[in-house]
Each structure stands twice: as C-alpha cells, then as structure tokens.
Length: 121
Length: 175
Image 1 (cartoon, one colour):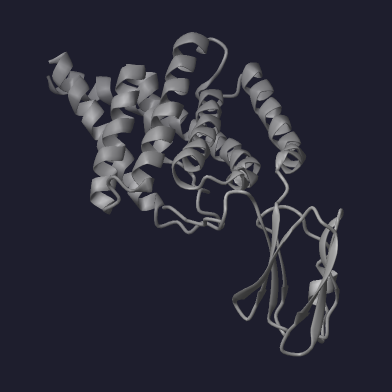
Image 2 (cartoon, one colour; image 1 turned 90 degrees about the horizontal axis):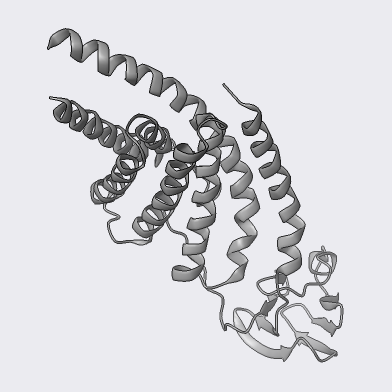
C-alpha cells in the first residue's frame, strides 16, 4: 500500500516536525514586562530589562523577586514548600511563577498587552 | 443516468462526511485542536473517485451543513473548518492529479493532514489569538497529524476500492 515516495515523505515530515520543536522555542520571543500580583491584584509592573530586587509583602511574609538578565526568579519566600523558588527563572511572555501560600503571582507579559486565551471547538 | 449516479454518490459522500465529522466531535481530546479528522477519509475517496472539484464540493458542503447541524455556523469552528478543509483538499486534489504515479492515498492523506494543521493554526493566529504562543502547539499537532494522516489514508484506500466495486456492480445489475 505504501510506495517508496510515501515512506520518504512520511520520514521527511517526521524529521522536520521533530526538528521544529527546538526551533519554535528559539523563535519564541521574550516578554517585556514583569507583573506582580498579590491576592489577585496587581501590585507592581516592571521592565524585564532593568535589574532589580522587589520585596513583596504577602500573607505569610516577604517574597523577594529578582529581575536580572537571566530572567525573573523568586529569591526567597516564607512558604513551606518553596515551589516558587524551585520553578527557577522565567523570561518568555506568558510564563508565570506562583507562590500560592503567600498569594504572590509573577507574570511575564509581552508588548501586546494582556494575554488572550481562548478555546474554540 | 451517469449524472444521476454521480450525484447520488457525491451526496452520499457528503452525508457520510457530516456524520463522521459530527460523531468525531464526541471523542474527547486532551488538546483543543487534536482531532483524528476522519472526515478526511471521505474527502480522499471523493478526490480519488471524482477528482478535485468534487472533493472541494464535499468539503465545503460538509462544513456548511455540519456546522449548521452542530450550531457552530459562523463561529470560529466554522472558519477553522472551512480554511483547513479547503486548504488540505486543494493540496490533496492537486497532489492526486499531478503526483499520482508516485504517491499512494496514504502519502496524499499525510500531505493533507499536514496542510490542514498549518492552515488552521495560521487562521487561529490571524483571526482569533494574535499571540505567537499558539505556534507552540504546532509540532505536537503536526506529529499527531502525520499519524492520523496514515490511518485515514489506509481507510480511504479500502473505502475507494469498495465504493468503486459497489457503484459499478450494484448499479449495472439493476439498470
């Protein structure tokens, strides 16, 4: 049922598709702004370009957020499991760091303003 | 008589593709655009038996009638179905016309599935979600599309031979 060109086509497409996994990540642009939310309310909006250290007073204590050229990360946090610290640093638009116990969310947004999210079926 | 026979075949193909497409909506999927595209079996069969024009007709009628039935007429689903459907049907029809000595229906089906995914995601990006993040999902869809393309191509090969036998034997003996 399969001819030789069929097999070549399928193999070629599989290779191209697999190769596009890292390529698409590469082309994905970086975010522009860092938005910090506390209990759902925006408490800070900073540029991703400038290095700074931001203390956020949450429910349990102070979460310290660091912006550097490597991205944004949570330096230290009073929460029990430290998941926000273990999340590492983020820099692409749409990525988030969440510290649920301390009610702190750090989001990266792009130029296009607020992110849109929709599902169509 | 030939025309009538042809029209009957084409309308039954449209009916089949609408039913297949509607039933497929009930198959749960982990990602919004991950679908088997079984309706493509019918489009492939239409192209193999009657050519590109009938293939396009089946696709367009399927999207119109199918979305009216499901209540998604003129919603994003309609434009996605129309764009992806027309794009992949054009590619498959032209490939069948020009490259038939080289590729079997399986290869042509894979080309169609690949086109369908690319066209649909481009429409999503241009019309609905203007965010380059949507292309994150593309490689996943394409890989899955290759797999379903092979499945659909195999199914279409069987359906084509069956339909060809059916259309001649059945109609010839009764007329």
